[in-house]
Amino acid sequence: MKGILYDTFKGQPKLTSLPDPAAPDHGVVLEVLATGMCRSDWHGWMGHDPDIVLPHVPGHEIAGRIIEVGNKVRNFKTGERVTLPFVCGCGSCRECQSGNQQVCDYQSQPGFTHWGSFAEKVRIDYADNNLVRLPDNISNEAAAALGCRFITAFRAVVDQAALKKNERIAIFGCGGVGLSAIMIAKALEAEIIAIDINEQALQLAKEVGAHHAINASGRKDVAALVKDISIGGVEVSIDALGSQITSINSIDSLKKRGRHI
Image (tube, rainbow, N blue to C red):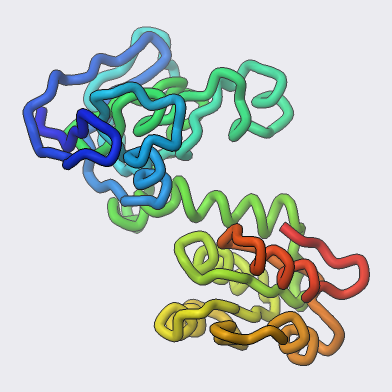
């Protein structure tokens, strides 16, 4: 198969011929139909992830078609079009059983623990616990965007924050995770305030559902602006960037008993 490989951290990736993966007992091999690029791929290439062993093929946002099935896989067959979360939990450990597969002690991550989806084929472990069949009305490209940024935002907004209809939410950072959070909050019929330092990102935030947009570039009163717009603070704030200033502003934007993620 063809794939994109790097031999050294920060080295030039190259398109080259690679050996085909084989399906493990509880896994499958996918023909890659679409794959996304994530900031985590950059971190891996930089050498920030200790799971990566060189040489390496990155890529973890995947839509694919099953072309080989392990002998212990029970719920999937060849020919099915699927996607998956970027962290594949084993399904059996204490964390998986509690619904926290993202911190599975035995997790498998294509593009990190083994070669990923920047190739024509990719191995997926724990198939029965992680694969999700794709309906015909979801494109390969849309599906490839779901398994990383979108499920990260979904868990934050729906599971952790428990955002409710008509509640107010401030989302700091309008990149992949932030925009996904905006779309999810819109579906939940919340009032959405988007904050970023990039006007183009804010315009896109409004297009996908934000009711208000704040350009925080050079401003020291961002939290105060959020409180003015929300009349006293938001019920939920999401720091979708992870910097010191966005974390502080996110917390300072909350009303009493608000929830910060």
